[in-house]
Amino acid sequence: MPQPTDYDQYPNLTFLGVLPEPRSYDDSAAVILPCPFEKTVSYMPGTRFGPREIIVASAQVELWDEEVGVDVHPRGIFTMPEMDLSHGTMDAAVAHIRRVAGEIMDDGKFLVTLGGEHSITPPLVAAAAARHEGLTVLQIDAHADLRDGYQGEANSHASAMMRTLDHVESLVQVGIRNISEEEARAVPGLNTTIFYDWNMRDNPRWMDRVLDSLTGPVYITVDLDGLEPGLISATGTPEPGGLAWREVTTLLRRTFEQKHVVACDVVELCPIPGHWSSNFVAARLVYKLLTYKFGLK
Image (cartoon, rainbow, N blue to C red; front, side, top):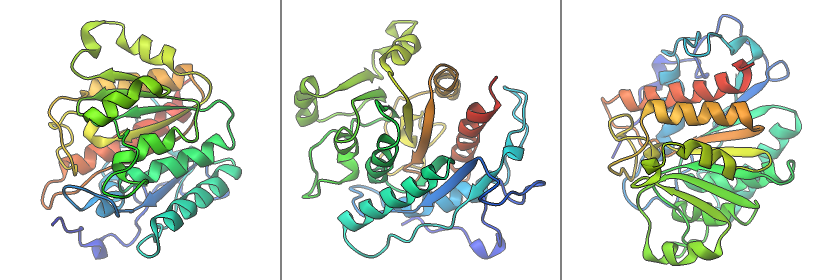
């Protein structure tokens, strides 16, 4: 089983490490919410260590983004304490995540939540949908997550997008390359548009099609197994195929340029002891989200 880093050597667990211009919660435009929730994993455990490993790795991320040509950290990036969801029922955890996310959003912050398993996304989306009419979700993922329940749990990580559809008008799923027969049979009756990894690049304008499918404000959820295993191998359910770095960052940048992105999450990092590259790629991706939100003109 994966084990966490020796955090004693990191006394200040804040995203991007010790910043040259640290800001308080009130003075920050963005909030990082570590949500180390792991209750319904069905293969490799360890996603509960994901948020901290992303934060530890983020101290090695350069603040200057060479693509956009900006350093957005002066806008204020505040890291919340880890949520404690280790006790209680699944329903209680879902309700708590939704409440905390809603309070942060009501304070006018751009929320980026770090998972943890993908079951954290529906309550985060529910909080955003209650504040942004007509919300659409952009999901980058290897898995459709459209089961109505899994292993007796309606709020399973394998049902994350089915539960998300309880709160939004439409869902756009990109990079999907593993789907069950149950899910495939359900898809025609769902408000979802799926871009399957095996054929989505047959049309060179596939990103245009993705963007055209996004209506209204947008919530972005990135399951890290949506990326190529060569970029992110440390996930609980890895799949061959997936998006390259240039593909995922271009899609995200264009989404921020053309749509109103209201919040994001990055989930399903399952750290591997002694393997740091996945942690760093995840941290870099989180900072890209913040850069695209605050650094694009």
